[in-house]
Length: 318
Image (cartoon, rainbow, N blue to C red; front, side):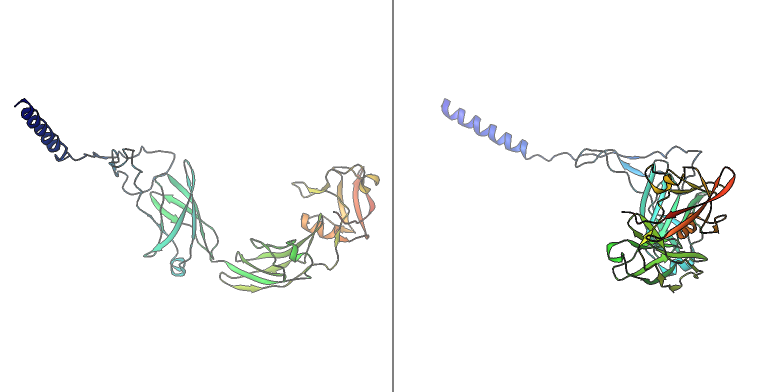
């Protein structure tokens, strides 16, 4: 009899345990609170739009604070011509906490940006257009005048150094390498500008004859540039220019030919091979002093208030 009672008690206990395990679990309640608007910063313009966003107090899956909800895309006014062209590109936005790079896209005549509440401005970089400034004025996003770029293509001759990456095209807002065949292509700024090719021969840089361009927005220009056929050499002087445009000699190696001639750091050069340097840029001065290996160049140097002519033999630099 006692054995049967034990069996009955055990069965009842198992039934009670099964009923407790199969009971309906209560739902996890996630409190949704309204995030307060960020404090206004008088030193920084705020973007117009809703500032209070719903935010879950806790993530029901992980228990961690949720990621902040993104702000709605900001609509920026931009030229209709740009929207019609529908270029791709990026926007660099300046923030109080640093900078961010966001993709730009177009919709219904406006540039859309995934921006931030503390964005105060930036720069728009669109393919085929010159960079334009981005600003937030009175809560309104505006883009400065966007100008369509021009393009330039051509061939550099001779091909010396092209296959070694020693030849480039510079000027007009471009700085591109020439391919092994001497060809180049670059996006350039519209309007008057100067384009030229450069080649590194060891430690000496030689430049082609500059070409003056004045491309219209969207215009494609073809230009061929000619570099010297000889290997460039120089007198090995480190030339500098003052704010007033005076050309001076930089540090002079003690064992060099310039030091043997008595040239010293700070000496003012008045002319190179008889050409007055007044008003010339360092590029122009370099064009005068660079020449074939073994040739001579005459510097007119100001010494003790008097012009003195000194002849230096050009040599290639390793």
